[in-house]
Image (cartoon, rainbow, N blue to C red; front, top):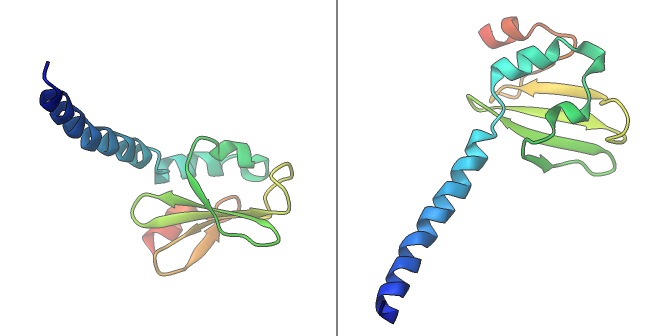
Length: 112
């Protein structure tokens, strides 16, 4: 194989690899059915229930993680330590309205 051919192949593979890695991140978005299912655990819901999903750390002085949820919702989980139970687990609408998924009616929230 010529050097030019090898470079062409490499240049074609780079965008493919980048697209594939972006696609796998999108597959990790939390869906609303999962949130509904997890909410049934009530006070037994922990940080570990969200392992494997990408998050953004937005807290300062306490742990606050922001997870992307389908349909432009997001999830905020806060607490003093990831080893303790979360203080709150909010499902947040694009408008900013929120509920704690452990105690509030998710189906009603989604309808409003």
